[in-house]
Length: 466
Image 1 (tube, rainbow, N blue to C red):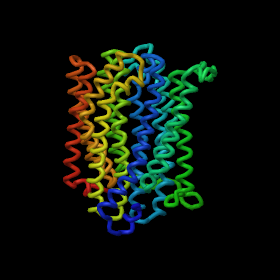
Image 2: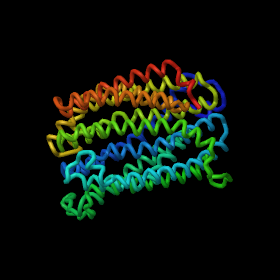
Image 3: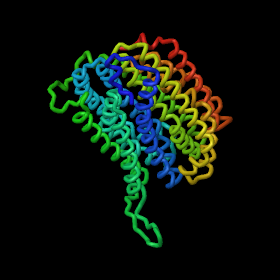
Image 4: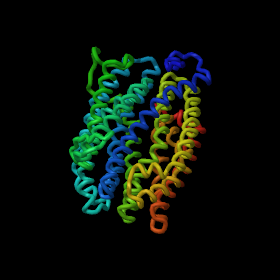
C-alpha cells in the first residue's frame, strides 16, 4: 500500500503508486461526501411524506442554506491548504500553529454569518416568492441551521484539516455515523407517535411530530455530535497536527490570515455569487408552481448523488497536489492533477448512467406525489448528460485549490453560471417549464468542464499558487 509520506520524503513516486494514493484518499472522501448528501436525501424523503407544502418549504430555502454553509466552508479552506503545504514541507509545528489560529478565526467569522442569517430568516422565503402556506415553515427550517453555523463550521474545519494531513478514513467514518444519527433523530422528531405492526405484534413508536422543524433539528443534532467528535480527534489524536499538550498562541497572525484570505476570499465570493445564481434559478422556478419548486429541490438532491463522488475525489486532489506543491515537487503535483481529474470523469460518467436509468425509482422514494415525480425524472435525465464535464470542473477546481490558485477558477465558475446558465434558463423556462431550467444547467456544466480542462492542461495554475 502506498504511503502519502513518500511525497514528503522526496522519493520516486511511480505511476502505480500515484494511482494507489489517489484511490486510497478518494474512496473515504467519496464516502464522506455521499453520506453528506444522503442526509439531505433522508431529510427530503421524510419531509416528502408530509405533503407538497412541506417539501416546497425545504426546497425554497435549500439554495440559501447552501450559500451560508458554503461561505463558512470556504473560509476553512484557506487554513487547511496552508496545513497541507506545511505537512508537505515536513514542518508539523507550523501546521499546528495554523490550526490554532484557524479555530479562533473560523468561530468568529461563522458567528458573524450566523447573526446575518438569523436577521433575514423571516423575510427570506417571501423574497424567494414563497406562498404564505410555505413561508413560515421555510423560515423555521432556515433559522435552525443558521443558528448552528459556528458548530457546523468546526465540522468543516476538522474534516478539511484531517484530509489535508492525509487522513480520509476518520472524516469518512464519522460522516457515515452522522448519516445514521440523522436517520434516527429525524425518525423520532419529524413524525408523531404512531403504531407499527411487526410480525403480528403492534409496537408503539414515540415521535415528536415536529415536521419540518424536526427535520432541521435532527440533522443539526447529528452534525453537532459529529463536529465535536472530529475536533476531539483532530486536536488530541492526529499525531501530525494534534495541539493537545503543545504550547502555542491561538491569536490569529497577519501572515497566516493574509494567505488564508488569498485562498478563501475568491472561493467565498465565488460561492456567494454562484449560490446567488442558484437562488435566482429558484426565483425563475417559483412562478411554475409548488409542484415545480418541490420537484426542482428533490431533483437537485437526487442529482447530487452523482456529483458528490466528484467532490470527494476533488478533496483527495487538494491533499495530493497540495502536499506535492509544499514539497516543491511540481511535476508530481501536475501528474496528480491529471490522474484525479481522469478518475473523477470516469466515476461521474458511471453515476450519470445510473441516475438516468434509475431516476424513476429515486424520485419514487422521495415523494408520493406523481406530478412531482414526473417533473423530477425528466430533469434528472436531462442533467445526466452533463456529468462527465461537471466532474472535470469539480476535480480540476480541487487541483487548483491544492496549490492556492483560486482567483481565476472562481472567475470561471462565476462567469459560467451567470453568463451561460441564467440567461438560457430565463429564456427556456416560460416555454419548456422546469425541463428548460435543467437543460440550461446541462449546457452550462458542459461549458464549464471544457474551460476547466483547458486551464488544467495549460499548466497556468501551477504558477499562481501560494
